[in-house]
Amino acid sequence: MKFRTALFATSLALSSTSLFAQADCSQAKDPKACEERVSKMKAAKADAEKACQGKTGPERNDCMTKQFCAQAKDPKACEENASKMKGKRQDARKACEGKTGADHDQCMAHEMCSKAKDSAKCEANAKERMARREKIHEACKDKTGEDLKACVREHRTQK
Image (cartoon, rainbow, N blue to C red; front, side, top):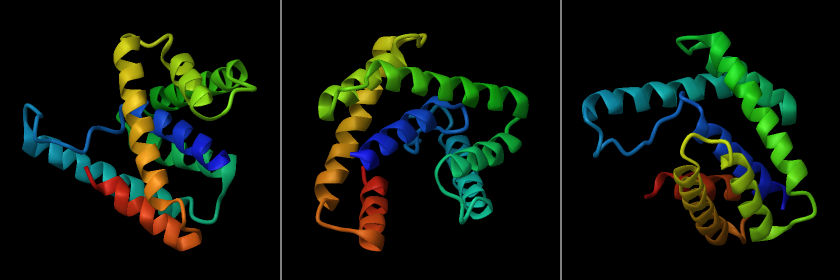
């Protein structure tokens, strides 16, 4: 259960920041520019993971945030946004305490999206991410350790 919650929180955080974009550039106005942004983001992620290697839990999360924000156009605004999202996640967790499984996931999505500019779109995206995550979970449920990590990576890259 902790893995699912952590994965959900991470996916919400990553999808909400301006540092990450959709990997599918086929519908973009400028597909070439989109592909360049995606490759830069992948390189930034690899650099951040390398810099934060060996750290776990909150320490790793803080390290990753600092690494990504250091590369942003406005690092201070990036860190403020990350801090705001962290506060939203904590508030959502409190509001959804006691709920489990799909009820907890839906509650978290609702709470995280309740103050978004377009809450309906935010919730639709959250449901899509939850469905994708559930599909990955189902495909990798019998695996552990490195096999699990490899399975998750493999299924994440598939459309």
